[in-house]
Length: 342
Image 1 (spheres, rainbow, N blue to C red):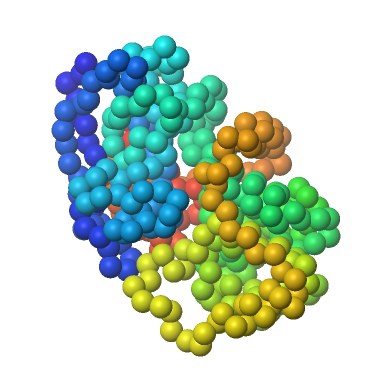
Image 2 (cartoon, rainbow, N blue to C red):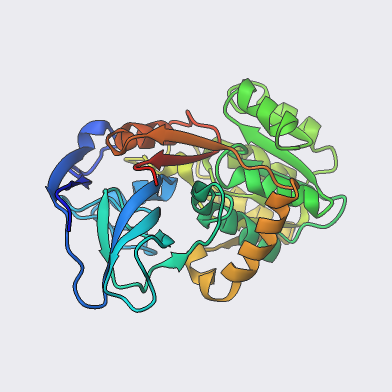
């Protein structure tokens, strides 16, 4: 098939708190050969996403199997078919796959989605892929923003948050972001079109959030948790909707967070204000919604109504460092790793 070696990054150790690059290991081996009904994929782009942190634990969160020690780190990819023994795929096809953190992978075709002419292809991992789909389903199905309402989203310049804010504006709502740093807030307002953005590193940011939401908060897209949710909770309006897709502030917790028990205040607010707080896992929605999402989001991106930021990292070997930086909030936009060209 080829004389190239297959590099793969495996889980070397279960992290304690924030992962380090020492929790990963780069290994090399032969490139696999496809058997009957299989295709050999070459990874072009690798997606890095916060949910991967949950899969590094011995017991997973319930929506995906954890990565075993010595196992290849999982992840979505844009891949090129380089050899095929599958009737629906030919060498040269560009596909969305789940090849993980490695150069080459085999597939039986069941997890592949033809990409056609997505330009640039990496967008299929971001605004035109899982993060954009997460924003689309969570905001429209659960958030249901109406014209004139206020939508708040944390991690506003991240892969999901940047899309949530722009979709809120398309629905005629005000978009208020929360981000880690003045530069990120500037990008949210000046480039992504948010109405306002608050720097969570500012000691007075909860007061600034209240000032930016004088009529309260109608939709809070929850993907962070922690102190951010503490500041949002008292501002929720009666009948507010809270889609929950993540809680990155707690992904690295090794023990329960310090401070008072927040549960009584949360449950009282949900009851008295009739707040709808609903978790969702985007994997549940691909069968019925994904094609409609691709068409609609593709049109919005092509028309310039939705802008997508990417943080591009060159080299598979840099994926561990880039992933740790992602969890530290050091990137803007969707984080993708360029593994190979072509």
